[in-house]
Amino acid sequence: MTQRIQIDQLEPKAYKPLFELESYLETSNLSVDHLHLIKIKSSFINGCGFCIDMHTKEALRVGESNLRIFQLNAFETSNVFSDEEKVLLQMTKEITLIHQNGLSEATYNKATKYFDEHYMAQIIMAICAINTWNRIAISTLKPF
Image 1 (cartoon, rainbow, N blue to C red):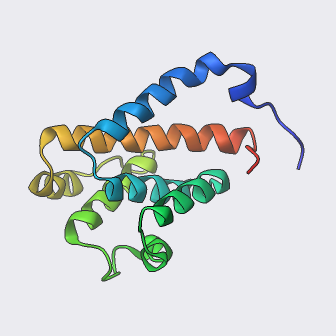
Image 2: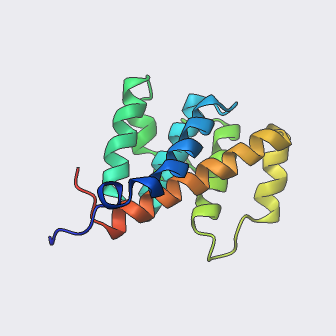
């Protein structure tokens, strides 16, 4: 592969607000498990090897199981995720694939049964953040 620009080195100030968003998310009410599921699922959908590598390693370090990571692509039919986690993963899928139909009314309504408005906002921001990181890593062929 050809070497491409590395925005973090060329324009470090452009990364500053992204790091601030990450810092906010780490101090938000989002559970560590939920944050890792969002980051890994979105990175799988987008095919971001750099982010998959980083976030699966992070998740494993804090106790996530290999089995759950392996089954993320079949979460709808898997029995290793709770109903709450399945809604979270469905939100991640629909928002990551926003161009298809967006966040559906059905998924949004299911999510309101598990999450309050603040938690929903934090979920959406986490999904947006990882999608931004995926797009940067993929477009620049971020080495890992």
